[in-house]
Image 1 (cartoon, rainbow, N blue to C red):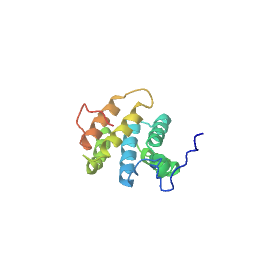
Image 2 (image 1 turned 30 degrees about the horizontal axis):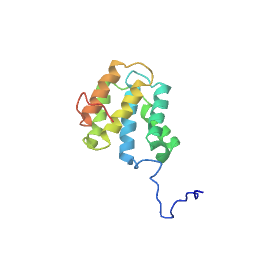
Image 3 (image 1 turned 45 degrees about the vertical axis):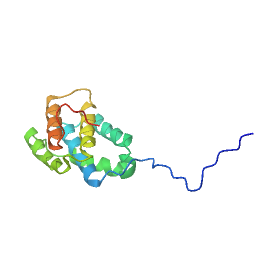
Image 4 (image 1 turned 60 degrees about the horizontal axis):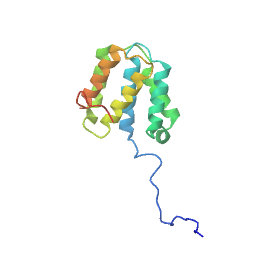
Length: 144
């Protein structure tokens, strides 16, 4: 008769949540997502939900907290409407993360938000290109 399986006491499991995303990376994700959400004039609630879903899928929401992330995103999309040029200038802050392992994650989050309402607005497509450029990602290479 087989014996029941028991785990050794020194057994370690990998964390359920992947490696922690830095606060700097999270702020960059919120910057990019907010710019995309506002690109067509007004943020659609589906875009906010899509961002939260993306962050949940990548283990970021559990680490940083839904309430804090939602509040930071809402602050990003609040206020006056920005021109595309203003948004592109604001995205220059992403340059500090160019070429890092976080760059594809940031670009993927922005693309996820852009797809949320089912319409790829020209302004969103233009800002996605700006985001990829600021992050040092080559054109034609899909984010991870």
